[in-house]
Image 1 (cartoon, rainbow, N blue to C red):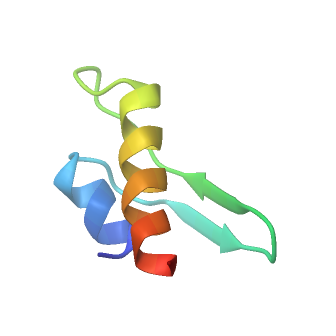
Image 2 (image 1 turned 90 degrees about the vertical axis):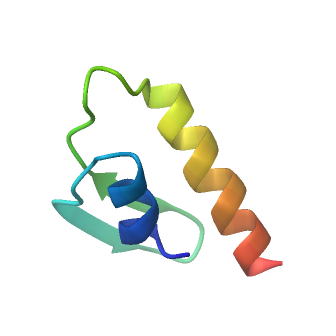
Length: 52
């Protein structure tokens, strides 16, 4: 799963996305029913599995 697909799964729309060697910048409005920590956990967890 890609970042855009994961964000859509949590009802977020990616507005800006930039990948560097050691970090990622993501700008996406988050609905009030989704916490920032929940979205971060989902993104980091799923992307880590994909990279490994």
